[in-house]
Image (cartoon, rainbow over all chains, first blue to last red; front, side, top):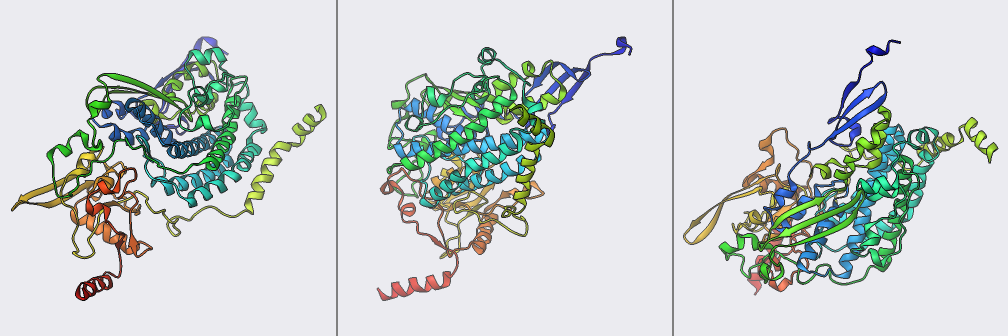
Length: 395
Length: 199
């Protein structure tokens, strides 16, 4: 073999590649099958959510956050609401906290189901995809029942939630949750010990604990490396400090451990939902002082001031509770990692600047580290294992 | 343990376990819905195609042109053309660009007279962009289509009366919004006239 004639080949992967989970584009410099360099290009799904929110009131920005991580829109909404509540100093009623926790965990299960479905499909296990989608369908139906939408829920409100949950929903949800651990076992029967799965995942895409922290990874991607960090435990929000759950951590930091972590999270989420249903208190679902729709006493009275940006704030002057140029950061544990909202506000009802700390964006950055030196086939497995959603990454 | 591992490796135990599961699934209850011929029941309160509620008594829309929906809309997809004639606001046209809409139903919550609704219809895709821009006639037609198909005689949208705000602070029309009759309008009309005659 004449080695002088070998040269590096540049392969463009994506943005339409089905296994890049959206519109991620990777430029791979390969030598044979081995990747020498990997450059991720993002921005194909950029919609300017951060900039748009500067033009909208806090309540109006809420539906935009649905579109960040569209597989778990509920968690995004909750994260934004918590940030604004912190800013305005609103205490959420207990029932609303529990409802939010239930739906957040449902969103987590939904999101992880899509992850296991697509990740297994990428690696070559088709059946898992069908089973996971079957279970997700049931959850989406439950979402539809409460929130009125299947994917982009816009359900929480600054200061609570939008509408109450009913008995029918709770019954159907507890039916599903009781059956769910068996379903997770089904997926595990298919892939957990499967030799093809093990060959593709064990020892591939290794990232050590120290490196993972330095790269800023969060969520199951970090926990797979054996670092104990979870926003739900460290900075509890909503009802997470009132329920009992464990944070599963891995050991080796390879794809298999990340997979294991998420599989265990399924069970923990089910556990959290079960406890929340048991403990669900009665009471209001929206705080008294939350921003509301301005309702004049007479519908025919048309006031020019009404159509200014105060429309969602009733009876209170917005300057009373937003100090000039305060800033606030609040984060929640999204299925992908720590989702943070940093809001700087001025004296208007709109954010001066909103910055979203999206876990997918950080995780996309670690791809070159994981891919370099690996084989082309492992790129797909790596993308799947860090579980990025490009809607959130590009914002 | 070693022997077990070797046996596992030779006889493909874990693969056969997986195959046994898939075989078992062959005899379980089917979950697939054959979509165009079979349809899943949509839950009440689903946010679908827009419609302007046709008042069952006057046969017209209820919009008063207060512009609250246009103001609250995060995607700025509602356009109202209105005119002031003889100290009265008249809504000439009401346009919703459904291709811009993000289906948050804030407009439905903000409407003081419950004139607007996101119905439970979800099959309204169009080959042309104009097919998704609804004007007043189209919105009223959407309501008629929806009313024809809805499985109940009365319709009430849960977003019309958002919780958390004291009902006494709602405008009277919103507070007293009753479920809208979709059928038997003639009968209801007769009942109402009978009552008024009696009193």
